[in-house]
Image (cartoon, rainbow over all chains, first blue to last red; front, side, top):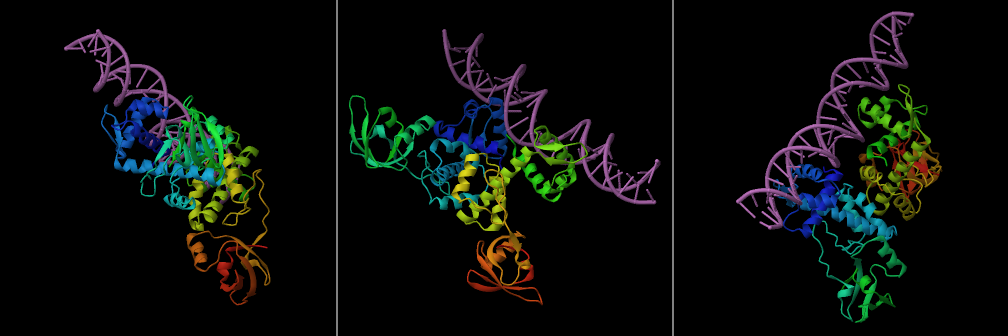
Length: 217
Length: 217
DNA sequence: AATAAAATTTAGTCTAATCTAAAAATATGT
DNA sequence: ACATATTTTTAGATTAGACTAAATTTTATT
């Protein structure tokens, strides 16, 4: 049985591997975890003994197959709970992360799978990130930033790039809701702002805003 | 911020105070927590320093007002999550306790209150135990055992005394479901077995079974 | 009231997860 | 290529929560 701390390390290693695909360094992990490098070395040794990562002194580390599965299971739980909090309990986006950080450590496969079913097997979380299924497979989501779309493109607004409170609250205030149907009406050459149709309203969004919204077509 | 361990101690002290109303002893608590008495003494000191209990060496301890509120908040979370697991995720009664033991430690008042609202402010959990409200007040539940009822009594089956898996599975098998409307039809003088009407079915239950079912009239 | 029994506390050890400071290994710049 | 900088690891300390064994206090029994 893994501790919370071990699980948090695994999760963070997983995320770092997405960027540094040829292995993660002690320093990179310590920065991400906001701990000292020596603490990371200690934990890395423990994870290595438990066969969760492959590690050679001074040479960085990578998740093992087993470690990968474990990390994905935690991410699955995190994202499912986020959906639950937003869709069932009416949390706003900017409040869910902290609570999901706790809920992701609840140990019950049965709970996870029943929650998944209760939520009707969602494929993406409120930030637009894909939710791995029971077998650990991530659904393919073809998403692009609003700012990269062509006039005429349409689809569903499924997530954000910037998930800061201030941005999410800005979206709320402007009635830009998750899962809204969106169509790109016009693009201004001058400032790259977009005219979009969203939920049968036509509004203008700045280039900066458009660069932080994902459309699934 | 309290640790899981501190929270578990508080909860257990609360339960013991229901029985030993003039204070709890180190030994009683160590038995209930399945730890050694010396470990309890250590923890008691810490809880005392944090003003969660009132403690005099060799003289036992009691929850302070603050400790009481904290314990009740944990019990509230435990019971709300049990309702969620049974009513929303279709867990069976005998599976919920272990998971609720984990969920009760999630720290977010907002989550607790939103969960409460989502569940429509339930007053009792799947074992028939009362759920304290946001202010820590327990609802008054007038429950009695089926075995103590008179012929003609009617009400709702709200909980069990024996919550062992084997008993809960037995109830499932015999279509005795929580919140069923019940009427006592007849009582056999010979073996004290009852004929009851439950969900428009008439069935017989043994005295032993009837001694473990609570009716709310 | 004296002594035996039981309960409680203290003292010291262990493990997990962190830290600081120092040592060792690796990487970099001229 | 070699001196320096950076990264990583080791060594030793700390805190929380548990433990064992011993000491102390309280309770019970004659």
